[in-house]
Length: 298
Image (cartoon, rainbow, N blue to C red; front, top):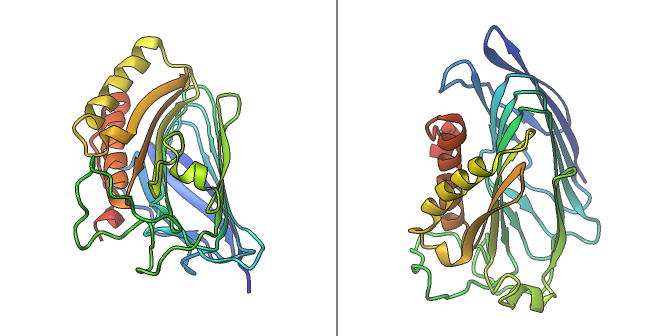
């Protein structure tokens, strides 16, 4: 049995309070809105009760952030792409921000199990004055864990990106199609296949690492050169002392985009660095503390 689930989420501003309303079809919904930072910032948790996707499943999420709203969306756990007999499993996310809206799209990591046929699509449109702070963290379950000397040895309780479910030797099977897009600003589209050993192990590719992550700040209005340089300095100050510094960096490929990238042997250090970068840019652009969603502490 395959699942086809849709959720449409609208944020509106009512008397300086960001209010969430949603409609859904299938097993996809949000939990109760929380306001740990005051009524202007609405925190929500996106829940998919089946807990993972198999071949033929499709999840579609559409978020519309109305003018002046500030919303934070996360998930209670990883998104899991399981094995497929041939049909792909798709996750399609469309984020639309109206003038002056702020959105933090912060799902926990995506785990691609061996034999999966996964497609992950994210598109973002921003009106003038809108801003989005987001990340994408992906672990490839078909990759063996590297033993690069530039990283601290993992502790016994660290989940390996190479095998999210156990210690079974990885097989050369599985595929991920990744599509990240801000129309007219940024387009990243590529396929990572378990059989593509050159991409997976080349120093110009993933260099043997099983986890890759991007953190980005997007603006509907172009940022000045000085704004971008200051934000990049803030990001580089976070990256420099971190154990992932040799495989991480920050850049601004477009006046409306700041982008930090990293490779890691496991999810945990990549997520830790992503959270630190989110904190730095949240403080830099919005003068807000790094308030974490309550679900992250569970």
